[in-house]
Structures are given as structure tokens and as C-alpha cells.
Image 1 (cartoon, rainbow, N blue to C red):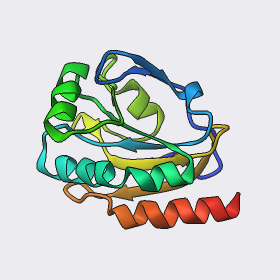
Image 2 (cartoon, rainbow, N blue to C red):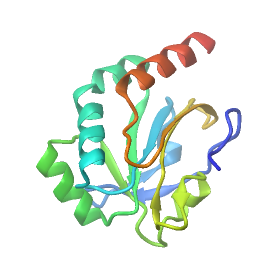
Image 3 (cartoon, helix red, strand yellow):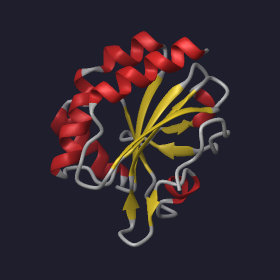
Length: 154
């Protein structure tokens, strides 16, 4: 089950596609944490491409965009290079899916992340959850509406 709105998101420290450690505590202005199943899959490639093409949406809201999968950091680097992705792709590779599990976004039967995104405020509190079923990307319009609603509420 995904985290509930109003709950405090678990802390994490994960390697990005460059091998640099990104800690949740460094996302002090707020963040959108996007869990996705696998780099190089068709739906994930399309979905992350939409995020890449709409980074101004996240910048305007003053939040940091990060995406998390159970892929290895080297796979994420190849994926970022192949798709011109500049935001952090975080590897929850080992222990396999530990952060993804802590966020209630791990599919135990399949062994990968569910399509769940969390909008976090500067204190790490979950302000909104965006999700979609396997095989369907989260529309960029859902992020725009959610970020607007969260900004209005704060």
C-alpha cells in the first residue's frame, strides 16, 4: 500500500546514475519522488521522457524531481545518456527494493516498483500521491494539477 497523504516519508540515501549519493534530507525545498519499474521499458521510457520535457513544471513549483527504480546505477546511467535525462535517477538496487518497499511501492510478486509518485513538502511530509496501473504511465497533466493543488494548500 502506498504511503498516505499526511504521513512522513521514509528517509533514504541512494546512488544516482553517476554514483553520487542523494539523500532525502537534501531535498529540503520539497520533492516529487517517482517510482518506476525499469529503465528501457517502453512505458517507462515514454513516461520519463515526458518528465524530462516538462522539467519547468517542477522548477516552477520549487520542487526537486527524482526517479527511483530497482535498476543498477550503471543501467540508469546508460538510460539517462540514451534519453538525455538530466534529473537524478536513483538506484534502489541493493538491498533489492529496500527504499521502494519503505514507500509502499514495491510489487513483491514481480520484484519491481509500482508506478507511484509522491509529492513531498520541504519537511518530507507526503502532500499528494499519483499512481497508475502496470502498463500505463502517469500523465504529465496529473503532476501539473497535483502540484498546483499542493501549492495552493500550502
